[in-house]
Amino acid sequence: MQRISTNMPNDDMQYHLRLRQWRMNELQNRMAEQTRIKELRDDPVGAAHSSRYQSLLVRLNRYVDNIGTVQSNYRLSEEYLKSANEVLHRVREIAVQGANSTYSKQQMKMMGIEVNQLLNHLVEAANARSGDGQALFAGDRVDSQPFRALKGKVPGADGQVITQVLYTGGMANNAAEVSEGSYVTTGLAGNQVFWAEQNEIMSDVDATSYVVQRDSSILIDNSQVDLKAGDNIYAVIAKINDSSAAVRAALDPVKNSLVISSTYPHQIWIEDGAPGSVLRDLGITTDFGKPPNNIAAEARSSGGSVFDMIVFIRDKLFSGESLHVGGAGIKGLDLAQNNLLSALAELGSKYERLDFAHSRISNEIPEIQRRNSVEMDIDIAEAIMNLKVLEYTHKAALGTAARIMQPTLLDFLR
Image (cartoon, rainbow, N blue to C red; front, side, top):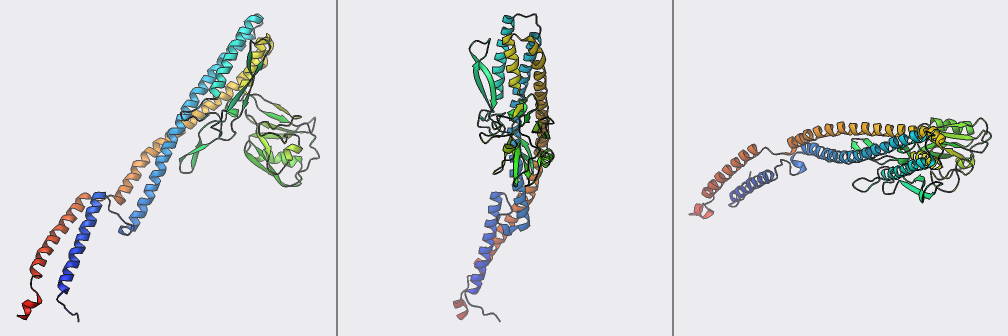
């Protein structure tokens, strides 16, 4: 049984009127925001789908931005590498000309002067920076100048000229994510691109009786090689050769010392991992300096850079030694140019890969936006119809309430 008081019809009518007003207000807000989900309880499943779609859209747009930045760096790098290749081509022409013994020393000096200017230009190209001021050929040390030119006096030259070019960048490369879990390098390591010969480091210490004293590791080109206590020199060599580092280790047949050679033209960076001393004990490195300036004084390191090849040719032209210009000089240039062209080819292939990734992501973004729209966007036509229905029923309820709520208890007591 329900007790009917004089206020109950009024309260009941007001409740339903306010409920209808709240529904109209909610619908108007959704229409204003053009979304059908204002709170999670409106559609938990749809809200979860939309959250994933929006998160994916943020990542896809970031990938597009990363691709644009990396491609811009690649385009700049390609132009500078092409310029460097033209320099090498011109130096080779001069070297072929200078190898002809019919030229006088004065004429060869003039050739040396031109080669020296080309060397200066090549150093400038190797120290190139992108639009945001980051070095293109410094590896992961993009804020530093990758190559430092040392100057001094050279016989036959007027004034000081470049005598050596040192690499001060990094061995590793920064990477940018261009797809889910997929990364590409944003720059190039100068001690790989501008290298001519394969690097070889030969120790002067007899290693036949060497045994690793404690568990330790060595780092070769940023690849870690773990060693165990009791490993002899043959185990050390095997572990180096089985690692991901682009080097080969062996024992010198004459000195029985450790020899580490690169498998492609680049400068080897090698050091002991803390707190080990394997490389130091084997006579490869010293306690002082960081790679690549930590090679032991007694060890022999061979294999030069592009700059070393050009400096060699220039100095021989200044001194009038045509025989060396046409022999070792041209050979070194050919090696340098081959390595440079390989870097250009790799750069082109990476650029093409980014083109495909950009095209795929550009097609994917509209589809994800469409799916998110299906989950979140309100159907305006349907919303307008529902709002009109609510307005009509609300007006009808108000009219009915005005007629019903007029009588009072006093009307029944008369």
